[in-house]
Image (cartoon, rainbow, N blue to C red; front, top):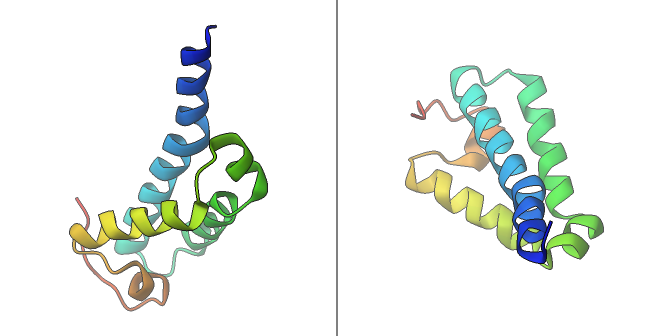
Length: 93
């Protein structure tokens, strides 16, 4: 693997896959706001984005990554804060 391939692999593994898992959990919560497994997974993923290993591997600001995810969800009409509080019932495509 060359350096570019390694960077692409890291981005896929460390950023893209957790973001996809986060999105899936949000979809699950829109269908069932009582899905405690999805809530727990969202919390785990956010914790990972805020961790030192994430920062060391990506040199990204985890808070900004979470804010970007929330902004993307907001554009889809999902208020993640309300959803996590059990008050959001928007159907995500």
